[in-house]
Length: 459
Image 1: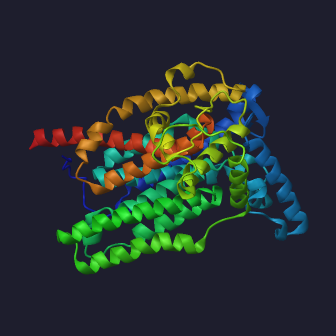
Image 2 (image 1 turned 120 degrees about the vertical axis):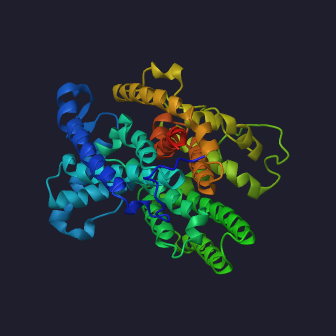
Image 3 (image 1 turned 90 degrees about the horizontal axis):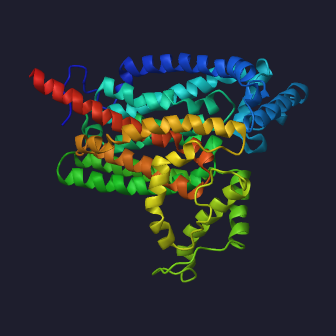
């Protein structure tokens, strides 16, 4: 049951034509700028000097080193020309972007705040649009965007130099684009805005490639799964005459083209190749978790490839954080597909509920991590409360195919990152967009139910 309030106008998949998301973008941009500048120029140097690495950067993170690398690269560009510029110096695109901006402005991180704020505000706008496509309520959609925009842990990337804000925006753009294909109203409209499907996907995949090119290997698999599901849904709609034959053929063409183009483009770089080399190197020395399985290890090389790659990725992150106190289940080394399946309930638990209450008061490896634990713990109280409404959203939007797709998309990527990234600090940054979007959908479902009951009483 959905509410029927006067502000719920059918925009045929174009909620960005409203003023509300743009107003949200503007307010979020200004607010994020103020918070980021306050962190860099006031809070860290004057109130938390023990956490200040200089130039508004946080001790214990990657941002201080990325800033220094960007300053050096900017100085080289000014001296030797733009031929020395790199997109990913030391494997980090934000460093290359910062260096390019430092050439034209003062080489200080506070000059990057407007760009970081725009990326963060745009991520909140994407959550708004995702929620609006399933709820058709401006109020519910604005509330859905608030966790993404307001959770204070996000300041660790928009007030610093980091890739997580760009990654979250890219993934949310992908979710928004693919959602369109699961909306019968999109294909059945008089003039489907195909750019509403293709453009968010193209920009989103580009942003993901920009900051985490190795994730494009995962996104190719996700694209194939999404296209298969979309084709199955489109065939059902065609048989039920929800959409005509011409639109069905158009859907087939577009949905098959997306994964094929991703394969042909082959987005990659040296870091992807080195990562693949690390996988091969680690798989030769790892001790795999034993377990009885119909697909025993060694019986099929192709079947072994998936758990081997996941195990190597986990070992890659653990080896980089040997002394980290936030490693989750470091002893888990999958050896078979069965090991992966039996770990799935635990992966869902970690993805949506970690850090757990027992970890809230524990100390981190360094002082900055201890502070971040306290911040994330406060956020998890909000997450726990909001996720209680997820069953309400699932019931309210049970007939909306796009809702089930986006919930599955966000959950799948959350779980995959739990398998790959055992360090909770890193995992929290990488899952942030997925988790806050699910929390937002849960909130949207609860608000939608309240508005529907209110509208029913007024009739």
